[in-house]
Length: 348
Figure 1 (tube, rainbow, N blue to C red):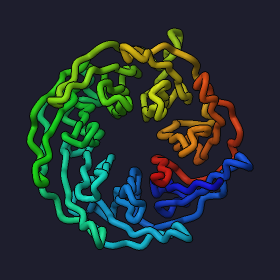
Figure 2: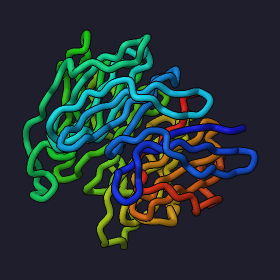
Figure 3: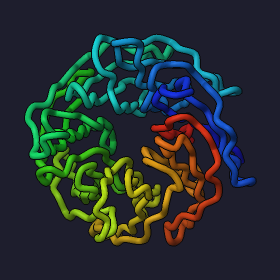
Figure 4: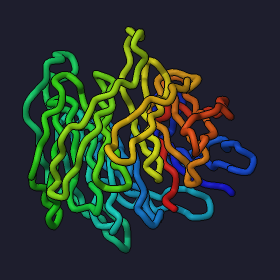
């Protein structure tokens, strides 16, 4: 079988924008990525659940925001539908709801969470319906001088939007009502931890949050009212590692048995086994990404493979995944794509 996806990049060096790729699961090989759309630094992107549209971070001169694309099912090529850019820094994360109605984004530089409405027929994106700016700071003077929103995504059953702010060490819960964001809960995490990304267990009751500054996975209890409480913190790094490393991405297998967390600096992916009753984690292994600064990764639709992106060595890495143990085995490390960040497969 062949499965397609997209890579978001920083457009420095020879990078042009968004790249498409194909994974051949029979040959156990990645195709050479090709340009799908030219846009400035589409560092993160996401697809509508029917795969008709792609919503990407975009930058044009001094303006940043979101760009909507229609997708050619045969070639993977993207055609721009419209863009919502304004003066200032681009967002860093974008999510799409399953009803193809709302898109939410997080802006690191501005410390804001935004909501947009998408036209279910044309796929075009409205201007921001709601903008919520966080307040506060953290103890790390260099990285936590101000709010730095890093993630905005929908909770199980999409009742709420969960938002993470690295600068304030907080996890916020917003209700999205006709496009308006209303804060309903917040959780102050360990000071200086610098929370970054979040993924939910398929049971909808446990969440796993990755911190960037302290390099930890936080196991969280999630309630139907949108509130979170901490269960445990577990490091993604070896005890004797003292060099600079920053947490990057976190994902969970669809059976809920294994959590994967990226380490930029240690340049590895940490694998954890989940406890089916408590959600707590047990360390399994760390696997080298064979390159520098693994920014993101994704399990393929079969979950027999994992693709990681090494931002600073401009490479994609293909691993085979053991579904019983969760462990990763290197298959391919010679796939070039310039300054890759986000990895996304089409929805199945």
